Image 1 (tube, rainbow, N blue to C red):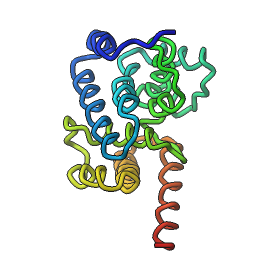
Image 2 (cartoon, rainbow, N blue to C red):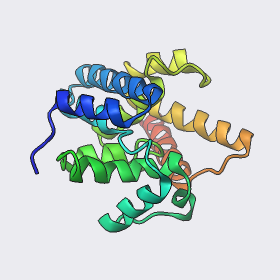
Image 3 (cartoon, rainbow, N blue to C red):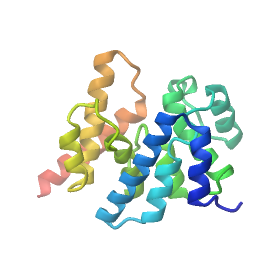
Image 4 (cartoon, one colour):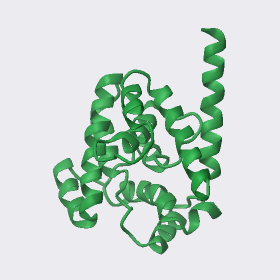
Length: 198
């Protein structure tokens, strides 16, 4: 399938997302492009993954379930009825099947932008961090610090985001997806090992 061009994709997303989500999407794409320039990642992939990361956000959760099932993606009990979790996996399916972006690294960046995963690629980290720090975000704790970290040590920023997310979810009584916990523990261990050998 031919890839939908950036301009055409932006036009489609403007129609398919609500206004707030569309503005957020543009901001994530811009932030991802900036981080890609900072770390020498593929600029086009980062920008396009940023544009596509929430492409399924405004569809019905039952349609998200069907998209994932049809594509053979395993859906955990935590994800099944949660559009805030499931849209990531459904979005990776739409990115490939509807928009023609089948690069595995891009699809993983879309798929794991909400929970993260152990062993993330640079592109996956860029999309995960960009989603959290884009200029339209303002309510998360420690944002000024994390924004600064993001452009000096993306792994440090990633770990801080995961930690703050877990603290927030636990304090509000929201369900914590086990993948988020697993990702935090993985990067915490790496950070501790790095500090031992520094």
